[in-house]
Length: 507
Image 1 (tube, rainbow, N blue to C red):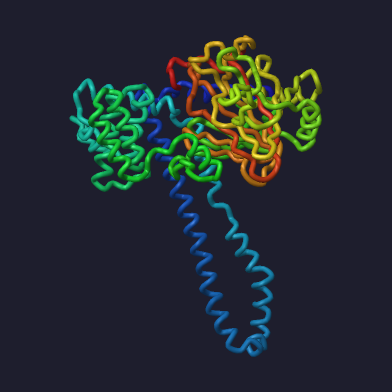
Image 2 (cartoon, one colour; image 1 turned 120 degrees about the horizontal axis):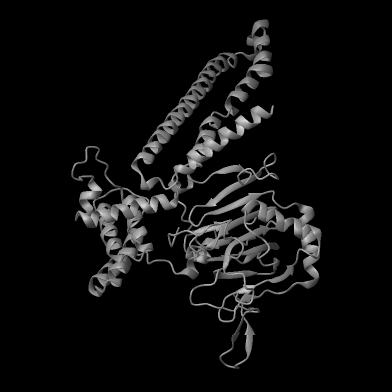
């Protein structure tokens, strides 16, 4: 038995080392060839799934056609038809047995093999860092060999045997990556190419308004105000001026304007998650669902029980006070206020309308258990995290768009805590909400809806320590119902070995 366990561990160790060696795919063509075989395997698996579905549909169709003919004959003279004892027996047999068999056939899950294979292979897919690295490599080659965008886009590269034209989405993605690197020169080149292909009639999920928005801004940043103005006029003529944040926030709250394309949605999965074999979850993994890809937002289902929710609410209710925000200058938590112009008096601001309370691990063993659960699932240190904050939103309760992390122009944010910036956010939904109350991310067009007993998690900082500005989010006003949430703001200190620093600023 010990020998078998040792052999099993050795195999796992070798497998892990093999997979680890294949990180940073974009840096080696040799390793990238492995991805072609992976994709070929997935295509074969997909075709097998299609064949199985077609065979199932074929059997159902044959059954329907046979019964259609039989029913037509029987209904001409129902009593006479059933006067034949064989027909009576066959009717009993069909309804008692054969229709049940048909039901089993229809309910048969033929996609399981394909989904299992895809989920398994996806763990070893290239990362965002690989995609960004490959894009930057293409831009370097473009500059070094003085290649124009059309030559690259049509696939007419010197010495190439396997031509591969680029779609509008490909060109747009290159332009976006250049834009994120504040490289407006390449942003202009690739947004122009995307626009050219759209003007030529290529169908795409990317619209001209979005491309023109990036293009005009990139040209403006390079000082060509006249051309930037012309492109902006063209954008306005399309009648779809870029949506201001406030309007986008309100649209998302209504369930409108969500920007998850079918192509990106296909990359989101559900899985049973044990955080790389954590002892607590190895035999009883939790249900994890991808909510969004960039920023990466995951939801954990059935992660806090009704009993735990009631205890948290019981502890929090006596001390609920008007919710606070972090002062960007001092870093101190305080009630949001503004000065009334006419009276000069400080008035409570309405951009955060809720009451909150803070619960420490020392107050009740259950709070300590909840904190430990967050640590076990995220792998992040909780000793430097802020206490569990419980919030209850009243009539029209909301929290307008904000960042959880401190920006560069807020050097003293969280200074008094001495634990660094907020690296990540964990948010429990402790009630269902009849209408409204979503958590929305206006910059990326994402919306996450409350569901009692679940929690969502995202990183506010890249591994480099730079803030991820796409995590700007808001809590929509509660239209009908009562919204209870609790959150844990996790800080940088103590994560040095749990989430090592990255060299890439935005990866």
